[in-house]
Length: 79
Image: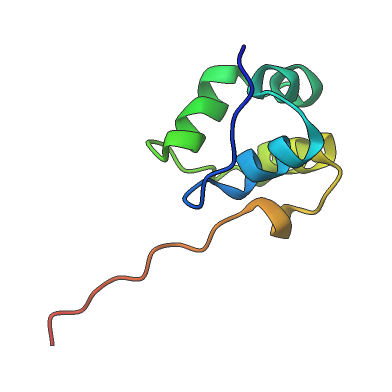
């Protein structure tokens, strides 16, 4: 699997992987989270919601859950 390069619009998980020199495949092996799930999170086609899965990823990345989650997009009200 090829290494990712840093971009402004990347998820915190992908940014942390780059900082550590890890690929998503490396993270998958270390965390037990499927590569396809990590890819979907990276493309933002799926949002990580399971706190236990996030904990596994955070442990594999050597950080806290708060370091890898993104805030929910704010809802625009039509007032």
